[in-house]
Length: 455
Image (cartoon, rainbow, N blue to C red):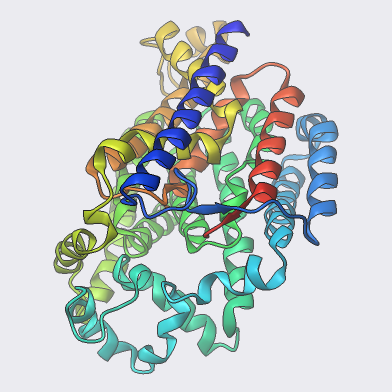
């Protein structure tokens, strides 16, 4: 426990340093382009209509979450996790009120709803998409449209086409779909590690401070799509399911056309294949539907005239034309990690410390689920924890690569949500869950009540 507190202290110091150094840099050179570094936010203590609900939900989850997660039937637990996560995200968003907290978020000048009218002819818009990425191009796309492949924008175009128009519907889409990422993570942990660890992780996935930015950011929706791609892959390799393999490939392809940076989810997928390698070895035919599904979305967009590689090359240029070319790498390369502390919480810092301890203490114990039954019978808990630690470590590696790339300078409180949801299960390794859950809830409530976040 003492070492856990050391990890928490180090994480708190990292955040403090990022705030103090960031305020100095922003105050002197104004090169960070954020008002409350390291977050895109401004200081503004406030209460809102969501305050009572958020506080009551936090108290109820801390008090009853661990016990209910331990004894509810599995499918009921998944439904309860999704419902609770949705309520938590929604209540936090409503602290800023319906208009500012939900309806307006995706309608600002940087966001997807600004260009709905330019997609009245979708095939033509896709063919010309790359012609509007650079800042000096005619009718250049707003920042988020230029910064993502067109599947992100098309999602909101299609919502508009079916009658779900405006920021309110778009925000609710991101909240309700984004909250399912918690369910996908639980399904994955149960398939690859064990059900007990999944149950212990459930309350931490619900009360994640990341919920502050999942309501409402399109990155919450991206996180859910990526998480379900991983979950279906885990089910495919452990249950040898051809249909799940195909569906997983389809979602992985969609993930890459929602965000360029989410190609790094491949590292989490690789960990799934390692942990489920017995299933792959026993049924190599799984690779056929997986790869076929993976090809569907890229083929469709390519045939429609959108060149992913050309768009990414132009995006890199656009990134350096704007604030990304000015923001100092020397600050953000470590301050972005402070953002990660804020979206995953101090409990996750302690959980990651324990993750490292598990990997050090159980080297060589990563075994296929059905192999070496005698050895697994001797140490089932340690093997399950090791498998969970590998999954979490893969997500951490993906996040660190994104950090070192220099293409995620600032705003990672939302950009890294798809990776952050895979760090939270490390909290399942912690004792005294109610104390840690309290820390998570308090951090989220303080962030949402003291700051006016930009997303």
